[in-house]
Length: 474
Image 1 (tube, rainbow, N blue to C red):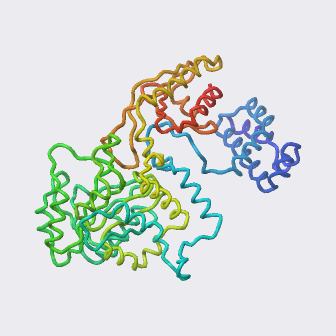
Image 2: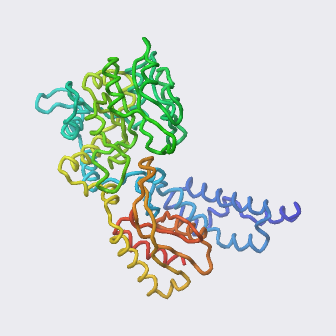
Image 3: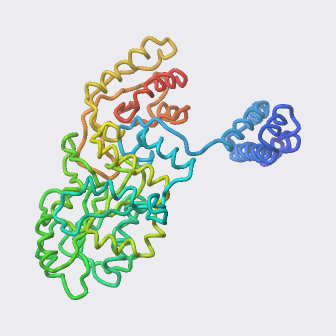
């Protein structure tokens, strides 16, 4: 489009003041304020200028857009003044989906958070003694119940920080600042957001001492590297990848024996950190926190919002004397969590203490049977086939696999039944986009030219919403 023609089109655009005086937008000024309405008007006009300038909007299209500009401004105002963080329906089949908030919380957790958040609490107050207390006692008592059976004669304590990376940072800084930490080259992992174990170690002011090779490390490699500057032996659980083939890794018991022999603490970064045996759910290769402590590991770090099924948090469980040292580190205060996290974690742990795994949504999703998922998917298919408005949509159920996610159990999958969708006039990507932009948004997978919905990660009361959204968007 020639610049002269663009100039003519730009002159057709109304001014901000002119639009603010129109009846529909004046109503928006009354309901949302002049600043919000004016900002929305400017945003809509900027989009129109950009489309004219790029040549995607001609004269006819611009005039149509101007006729509907009040509706566009109203949409912009509502979008700008509504919550950005909102619920979505996770139909990906990835239970601990990092981008979708990882583990959903139980109803009992939400109730305890509400009660704690809307009133005063005894967060750091000893009621019986009438004096200041410690905030971590509320969960440490429950961790002691869950992790009590170990080989550690000094007893087990647990403290909480804001995530597992913070837990690793605090532990390394407390136990090994200025000294060396020995770790296998095959365990120098990178976790989400490009955070790497060597980087965290550098921030802790501990010195990394790599041993072995990427695929093979022996206990003798650790022993040869130990010197007068060694402060800690570190084992990092390869939870988000696996090395297969010509590999070797020292057993946990061998590392425990070496640590005892050399009078050094052994720390294990479990990452996900399950509190139950996941083999009962068909998930292999994920040891629990109790497994590590029973084997004689001195300190274990793990996450709260992964296999534990609670809020975002980082736990450090281990020898009480080591935990006491970390509690006294000034970094602990900088990394500590607030009362809402403690409330959520306490309610989650109580479900474990009561042996009520099914109260924890993530564990309940892992335990779902393929037949039950298929029954729900079949009902959705039948509802869509009865609806004439969805006649261009073909829906079927097929076999598939769910994933644990969250960097846990990378080689374990759970058999499931998928809802497979195709549309006569829409590509799979277009259909998936419409699902994402619906209300509520539905996040799906696309494979082999089909949109796939896995109901393992969809709450049963959301099945009807999926049917409603599909009716609207097709």
